[in-house]
Image 1 (cartoon, protein in one colour):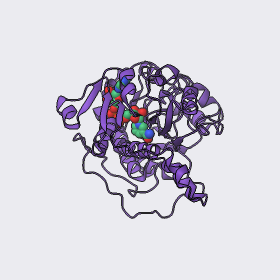
Image 2 (cartoon, protein in one colour; image 1 turned 45 degrees about the horizontal axis):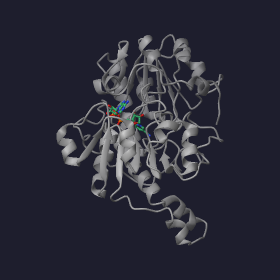
Image 3 (cartoon, rainbow, N blue to C red; image 1 turned 180 degrees about the vertical axis):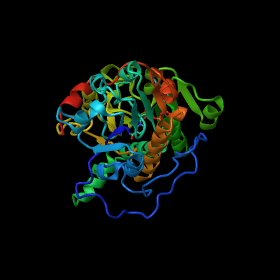
Image 4 (spheres, rainbow, N blue to C red; image 1 turned 90 degrees about the horizontal axis):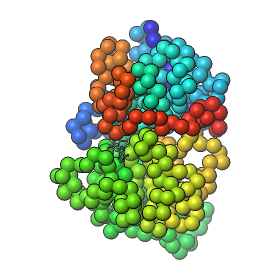
Length: 400
Ligand code: NAD
């Protein structure tokens, strides 16, 4: 019997939904590179239900309990009295979502003597100290591709919101106003701008493809160069360093994982390479960007706007300076947890658990760490070492 601890975000303030805005949740048949959607033997949830909050339980309870396992579901993850800390010593599996991350620090991993598997219900496993997982022979897996296209949609939405000054214009309407000059004095067309993505993996490449019809110039930086045919099809310009990419871009979007190479890649020095008045969109990870340097760049006008949905830590403090910075279109961490995406990643978690319990290999593309080293998507997209610095503090103190 395994004890499974599942950390999920809180239910809606008004209670768990009893009905939904739509009756169905259309899904793609296959991902763009030919990877299949999750293939669990069965699911015990209705596609389109809210699965990522505590009462949704990722649809796992029936499956786990009927196989004799114990499931603990909680949103209590930070602070010394957290349910997560209480349940960790005899947990075999920990599941959490990047939206409400269980910071699996080296300290926590050291106390979890029975821990064998950490599953990210989503994509991006930086909230786990991957170096500690490597050293303690713990497998880390995520549901690769489950929400990559969902995030790409949010990136395009965010770029348009910033460039066209959508949110301030909408607010004018909410406030009963109609001053068109106020709305348009920061409004531009995206057409003819240069857009650069840091990383052209599943999300970054999708963003490039979605933006192509807008008539923009497209640029990318990645440690793996795309096939020549793709570069030609999208008329891409490849850059081998950040300075070269941001110098030419009117819009920069970050789409790489957080690992030691990428932590704080956007800082006071690199922000000075940006064109004055450019826009930055980050749906990748909060810690790619230096918190205070970003606020300075928005206040000085070096950046004309910032958008995205990722913060550090999560949840951020009520007085986190990004909340009140000028010209931002930030949201809570939502882009990868639409109801459509939840259906896919809940099924993906079930697939990973079925493989684990039946001692079958977990799909290689889902693996981040296995057998004491980076594996699968981890070997392709991450680097060894710890990018969770500061998470110890986040895990110890409840800030919300
Ligand atoms: P992916 O593995 O397909 O792509 C990652 C790309 O980053 C790879 O092409 C890799 O080569 C590149 N990369 C890694 N290190 C780099 C570096 N130092 N410089 C340049 N490129 C580098 O993953 P994906 O599905 O595209 O997701 C990317 C990241 O987006 C995730 O790791 C996660 O942090 C974030 N994400 C956020 C959400 C959300 O809800 N906001 C959801 C999914 C993923």
